[in-house]
Image 1 (tube, rainbow, N blue to C red):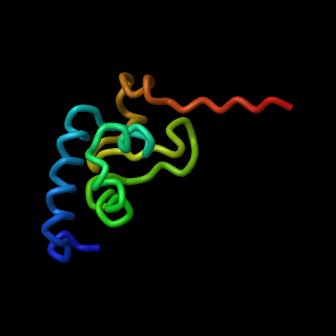
Image 2: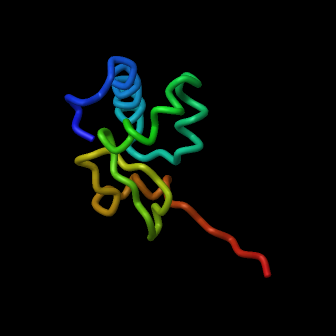
Length: 88
């Protein structure tokens, strides 16, 4: 969705998300849900892709990464690596 197609409430949500991504460049959806107002959560599907891109696999799988930030080029982003443990 284009930014100029967002509703006023979605624009407000977007500004709050931009603020969160300025605090740190990588978030899981669950962490974002715990750090934004509850009314923003239902707008994530529309608004999050205007602020960040989704890592589907690799060390940062299932995270949202701020546009313009590449965790592979920033050593400090190792703190956001997702570890999966499978118990058989």
